[in-house]
Length: 208
Image (cartoon, rainbow, N blue to C red; front, side, top):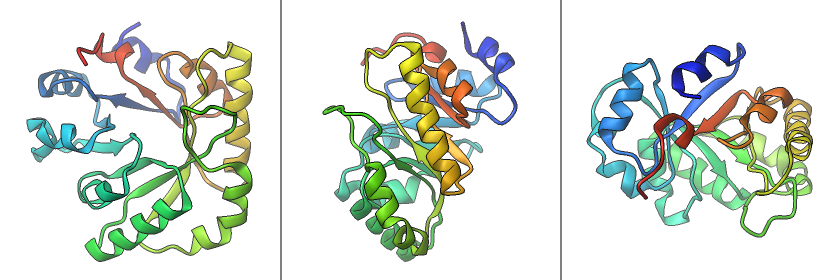
């Protein structure tokens, strides 16, 4: 399945984020020529080195990688969306920097719904206990939750975790769920994803 085929079958309300990390500017420009405007990068330095990133070409850039505190200023300066805010402390820092820079990034809070030492994120209890304070933060627009499922789950297990994320987002009156990647995007859509993050399925195999 390629980009055109996926776009044809996406339900209304589901946005496709083309994960361009590890791919060249020319690859991004080709997918852009097919109508794609949302692209996701996970390393600030890699993104900034791509000529296409700096051009004024109406592309919308999403940061989807693990956030390092010392990179927060550059992330806020250069990205429209931040999908991977995995702690209350980082959320506070993003709010502070956004206010200083007079920016208003759209933010997803990363939630961890299953035990997985490889993944970061707030637990459900952390999210709920801090929710009042989170809602008071200035300079950021919290639009949804993001989650990454552990590897090795079957379709039913993936759906259950994605559905849990959707239910929590609904409880907090957040419209968006960023969930689902190349191996589990179909289950994510069934569970109510509004953003799916696809890389190799669109661009082909990564060189790095």
